[in-house]
Image (cartoon, rainbow, N blue to C red; front, side, top):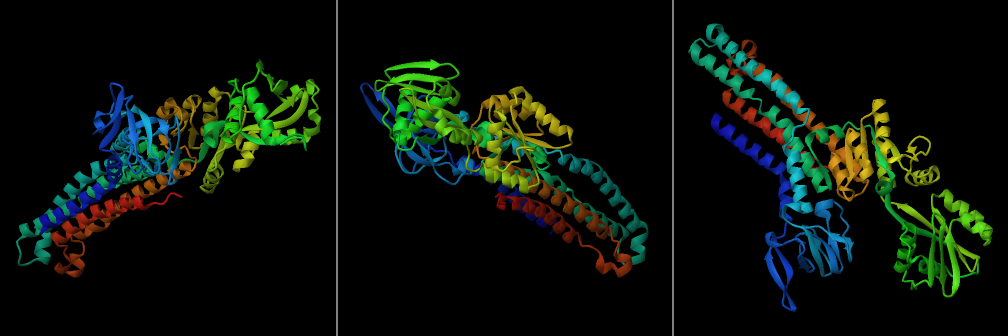
Length: 561
């Protein structure tokens, strides 16, 4: 019966531990088995269906509606919406157009398209995610050292206790309470009961099962945790430092406002003139104007001449007339009459926007405001961090006017929670300053210049779409590039750490309560009928392990907000 109970317990334990690895199995299940590629045969191209392992970098892959994307690549023809939720945790399908990247394992929803393979086999994003999750689940958390240290003393102490218990019942206890039984038999039963019920299996399972479950839940939400130490540390974070560009904002300038003189000309005509003049410029602000005009279907012509005024603006000939684009100061110097919209210029600048004034034939005709727009989810994410009791700081190299404008949009206090005009090399110094005040700091960034700060922080969190060096320097990768993943990662860490502590508590409490009963402490008071049966001890021992595994599995049902 003892062997049967232990075997059943081990089976339930193994089954539960296997469920903690569901995340890995689900990720592996995303892989497509075959791929449809285009191969050139002379002057014609034919579609061939081949095993996904045979796809080569550079192959042109054809994907139809409802099919899994077999490998990573870049769209070269067609368009579609793609469900990437199984990789990023983002429920909304993502629109894919020419030159957009697609991820192997995601699901094509609506249209057909072709893409050129850029990563295959172990180099795909899915393969790297699986490898990172496996490494994290196999790593040790610092809190596990406590359980190991206790076990190193606990096991020899229990063996010694079993011998003492056996000696007591052999020499004294059996004669007092078991008059008609063999002293050797009585002592062996008590020794076996103590050894069975005090097996430290639950202590050994307390930490790794919770780590496996926690990292798996993270992967399903697009949060990749490098190792168990990072998972544990994230739960103790008290301050979060956020890089602005590409983290809080999109990191890409975009046109936000078009302002024309009343009755002078339509806004789209202003945009057409500006886009035509800027068509040959490589400046990011010029590219933003041209891209915005294309999005609105504005016809962009070719300027008859173009000249860049370095650091000031551009001048061009459009439709036979001179066009000047530049700062409001440039327009004032040229006497174009910008003063009529001076209030609008000041308002736009106070909102942290870059104002580009446009003059046609030396006559001011309107304003175009360009800004690095805030991500839709940034304000909600920062509000959630505040609700978690975290100090939040925004770092930016921008001027204070822009920094304050962005801070107001996302709910940060410009006086206490913003540091502006920061040089790239000084970001790590800001993290050190927070650490010097006794705070546990998480740094969130996406660029090459964020890498030193990510490495300096107690927990570095890299936006998944950011630079490779930033991801390498970080402890946590947020695949979605969504700031909401930051409070989710911290919440997941806290829940995982809470689960570990619960597991350790119950494992210790179980042994503290059960060992005296197994040693026969109730027999002198209530008689031999209160002796703990070894079969019950075996069942209780197995149950303790199953309880710990089941408690860890509760993390899989966690809702991270």
